[in-house]
Length: 391
Image (cartoon, rainbow, N blue to C red; front, side, top):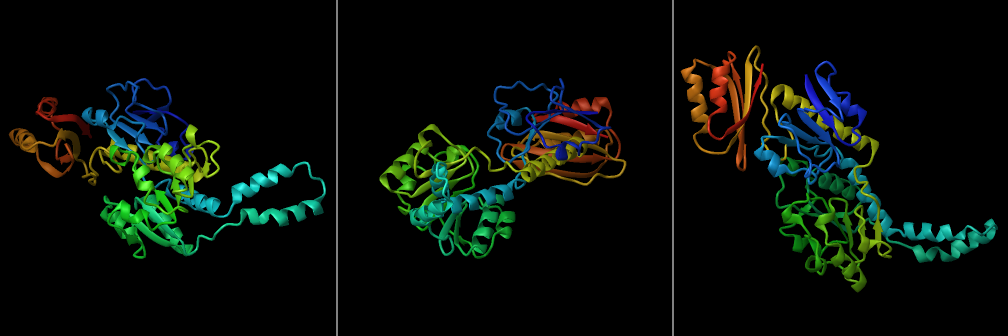
């Protein structure tokens, strides 16, 4: 029986995928094997040693102390792409809101509550509507920073709307590149992209390298009419620099779902709560992906969509005993382990070894189950930790 502790409200569509005969799922289990959460901050939480996996039903993991958990052998999963469509639709909404005077027009109409003559109201609206005239997005240029799951979908819908699309992503993966339309013009640098765009949309993670990547210097490179859209993470944009640029007329508007005090009430800012992934479908998709990944890891040792350990999967060999372990990515570790197997006549049916930065992950299927004495020897090998036996 596996114990799962939940934080936040996790979609029932995801939680129902935990087989009830093998999993106990609750928000107060004392010795959980895995944690499932959305926005709960774990930096100040003390997790018991029983925890071997943490899964976020969402893309970002800045609410999880990933480095600390890596040293403890805790696999951290996220759900990349599960909320991509929801964010894509919000980006399109942001572009339309910034282009067509919709918010300003709505605010004007809301002031007419005391009028009771429909004909008089119609005449007034016809007279005043020119104040809210906008521009079409067809034929305009959107710059996408980050061309992963969300960025590629934004590119597709922008192309379908007749926009020109330029993109920048120095860490573009091969899989993401295959999904990207050939009509997207890749730029060699962020600076080269900024000077061309009418809209800038950001889809990069919140990591030290991206903190305030949109700042006083980068904003100064943009058109005075350009619109910056941030539905990724608050820290990517320096809000004080944005306000200064808006006041100076260096950019046209800022649209985001990360309201901050300095942005509130600014006439060139449209900000909403952090609702990028707040759709029923996105919450369900994220929960389903997170639960499936946790189950596959707990039951089979397979790792998919981890942010701190390598993607590592291997089909189960019939009647085999599976061993998994994490180790520091140091030479000689596998040799020490294999010598233990050889001395104890243990035959390896299949194995896979993958590394990511300073850690490696291993899955081995053995013909027979090792004795408890051999398991102790495996756990005592220098640099090996989090050894699991999956019969």
